[in-house]
Amino acid sequence: MSADHLNMLILARKLEIGSTLVLKHPIEAFMYTQSTKDIKKKIKGMRRICMRCKAVETKEKHFKACARCQGSFYCSKECQKSDWLASHKANCVETQKKKRVERLIGALIANNNFFGFLKIAIILRLGLHTAPLPAEPFTALVPLVVEPEDILDFARLHGDLPPRTTTNPAQKMKGMLQVGGAFASPESPELKEKRLDLIRELLGAHPATFEPGSMFGIVCFSMGDPATIIEVPTIISPELMAIATQAVPFVQTITDVTREHTATLPLHFFSCVEYINTTIRRDTDNRLLLREKMTEDDEKIITQSATDYDRRGEGGFGCRIIDLRIKNEYIYQPILKDPEKEI
Image (cartoon, rainbow, N blue to C red; front, side, top):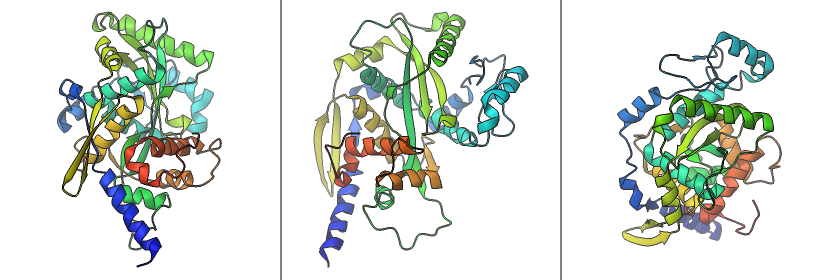
């Protein structure tokens, strides 16, 4: 056996051990994970936002999707026509991707457990717990990626292991949704004002549903393409603010053959993200509805991230998210080549 072959076997084994990672936190008991039936029911009841005027869908008034891409929704024919002339005509085909993104985001935020930890990640990332409640709503960007469900397939796409020799090119690789982090969302003054109007409308329509001390904002989910951005009005409760402040750590368990290794992991914005991602990885039966077949674009981002591909160009944002996940999540440590690299 050659030294290179032996090193490949060792790397594969380290990655497989990393995939056994389980993170637990005391608050899981209060943010329970619903059944598949409950998640589907919750997705069906979600309200959409008009792409033009940012009005929020109600039970009395359902919004209609663009007949061509099925990814953008409008409260009226006037709004649809106005948005078509302003911008939608140019990217309507591209927003076919948006339907896929909307379905995955729906399943993610319909899960109380995942959305709760994502909100804690936003609190910690934006420092919302370290100062008096801001007068204006927050805006956060949450990038999403679809990665292979098998960590060895990720390593093959990333160039750390040789490609499979028996893979049928016509057969799409099995994948799963993964969260890329939580960041402050850059925005123009015009976009900021639209988002403020959206929050004001939400507050005015449902004033009795918010606890005193709650925070309001917009979470912008995206899969690296401006055409796939979906804005979700979000409420952060005082209870979640308190959890972020108390910073009770996660309990981390890794299994190596028959031995379990247990340690604590500080409550940090990326440990909250890692909790979501590892839980999705363990859901092999797709009970949480977050499994998805890989597309060529999904695979391309992972392949490009292993090269000197320009992170500032088209597709560069997705590469930066892969870089960030490799640097911060335990499962990728065996393929981390430069821990000091600035991302």
